[in-house]
Figure 1 (cartoon, rainbow, N blue to C red):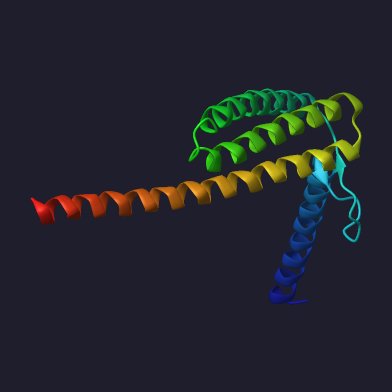
Figure 2: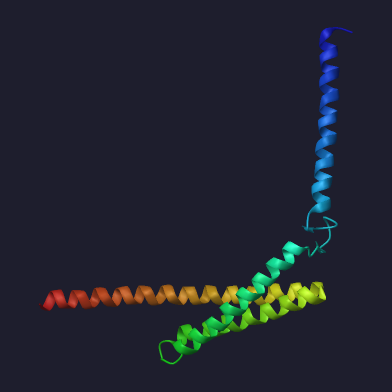
Length: 160
């Protein structure tokens, strides 16, 4: 055996050791991952509720409740005017969906059933959709407001 063969053999041995180390690291990461799929071909997800996740769930529940109540109050106040109805109704709907999602998440925290997680995503998804609609309405109102200001400003400059 010459020197080149000896070097190749050592490199292959070291490469094999590093591949084993990488494989063990990947298995360890997969083992302790809190949110992973058991089978890549399956739609099932395993989710472990550790103490940090429970603390984060409580924070999300509290934040959703507060935001939901504030959205409902601001939506009701905005709906007192005729023009405000366009933004008030979606704001109230967002508040209702956020409150609903917080209740479902609270049930998930105590019952630990996957159906509640699905319901949470459904409720929160609707709240996000209504928020998008509200943002689009707000952008349209802003553009109309700018056009109105330009027209009024042009009117005053032209006649003054």
